[in-house]
Length: 467
Ligand SMILES: *Cc1c(COP(=O)(O)O)cnc(C)c1O
Image (cartoon, rainbow, N blue to C red; front, side, top):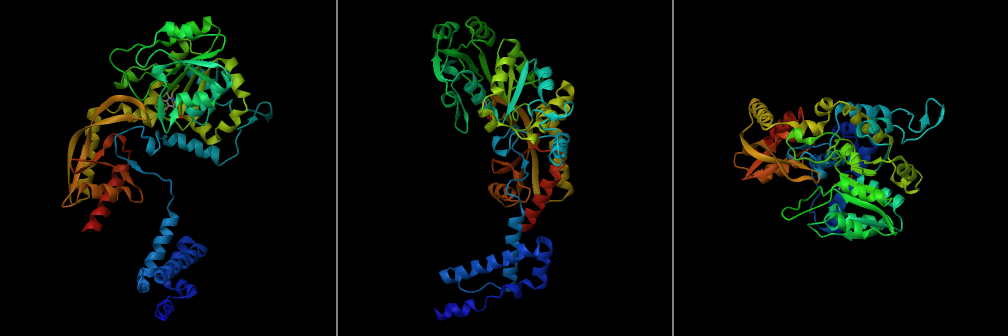
């Protein structure tokens, strides 16, 4: 015991330690308050360790300074921060799904750092609605009568059902009772919103007659859900929205269509399989269409509801809307994103998600060559080659479709690829890469402009640490 006390008495005093030149420089960088907190925490930690017997002696002054500096650095870095996606999956849900263009983020920053007309009608000089800002543009892009935007597509589906079918039956095909991920399951969402599920057909086949015979005076709506994240092949049949719409309208019911990704332009131009656009879904007679803001649309997280005015007006009066409402930054990002879509060619040039999908195999090869040239310029002790890979769309979109592409496969002499991959993940600007055949693979499709240089710098640091 006495021995322990003797060791502890050698711990420096907080104020004395703070007055050291190297520590007071830290105070200049991180503020005096934070530096003091860091010194106190580090000294307390050492004291605890000595009392607990997990530490035999006090650290050297140099070690203590390093601990304080690391404590401050850790507090300084943001927990949620940018990283480099070298996986080749364009809509990587774990990595934030879609990314915004610089132009869009500039508009968001302008709206966020100033007052705005979020709920102010500039012409009337009085109260306005936050839901008015996107109406004209989205009606033009989709042909809808009215629009509404909420927190995400799950919220959109919830609000639609809660408004249109409380206590009523929602007729839906057994082949469309999907789980989207993150435990978002269509059957549960229908139940939570107060609707009653009326399943029809079978997993692989549903006919129009199945829907028809399920309609009673207790039916509130017919619903179609885009099976975006899986595919049934073989002996299958589903009913098109045009036929379903005709049935719904003959019965005086709305047809709700959860499209998932919600395309504004035809994706077959990128070689992707055909999927109906939002406009086509409405033209086919869907009364309400819902889709995500941050899937193939390439905007911020949001749920977009478009369709018949009478239904959307009812949703605007639903109390639930208040709990699902979007922030001004989201509205700003959506408006700026939609603006690119007024001209399809513009959209392909300006929306990052579309830019990445538009890259051909040859484009990716050229990006690989540039990346390797940058590596060579840095004279890093690595070996790099170009390999064929398949990139994914991701975000639960086009599950069975892969994009033929190229990646840079890299080895660092004598070091396991998994170790390099791990170190890349732990950098200040982390790089998320895959390991294939004991090589670190950088899929260039999702690496943004100037990020190649950051990867080089990170590799340089890692090589120096390992040397
Ligand atoms: C992705 C998806 C959702 C959920 O959308 P979020 O914006 O992630 O809430 C709902 N329905 C379908 C069909 C989807 O593909």
